[in-house]
Picture 1 (cartoon, rainbow, N blue to C red):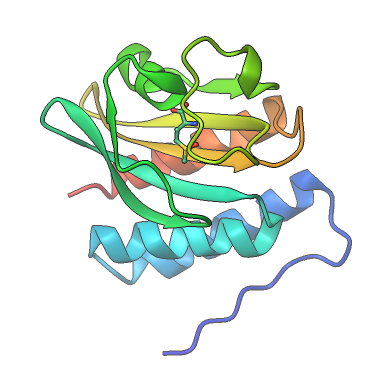
Picture 2 (picture 1 turned 60 degrees about the horizontal axis):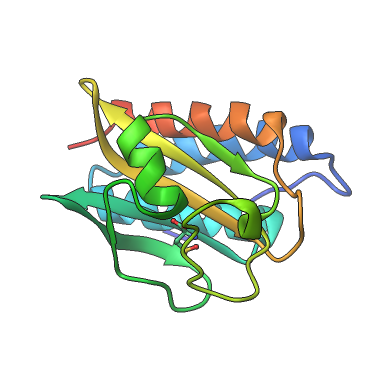
Length: 161
Ligand code: SME
């Protein structure tokens, strides 16, 4: 089935999130496969915002393993507590990083990455994945992104299997 993404013309960040979140929910509600749904979620975010890198790392045993993503080749495994992603996992809270160079232990998968937001997907009190979004500009992400990305991660948690 062909799917088309609808985006507001010259929309603000809020307008774009308000437009795409129901579309992500629509797309994923008709599919039960987790990888398919995470893949389309990345595709929608990439098409809507054109950020450098958007992807999921999945908790597998004692590390994060690269999952569905859009963007350049990335690191495949991250230990708990390492980098922004591993710290998000360890602390089960969202990190909005205005300047990745200023984040102790930041893992530079791409030298083009300048700022990032990482949010956990939490199921039954356990982090099962993180959603990482990287920008090639400083200070791209703020509390608006945090609000909507957390809403998205909570929704994905409700569909996790
Ligand atoms: N920068 C992340 C690593 C993942 S890549 O950016 C895709 C981190 O510090 O955890």
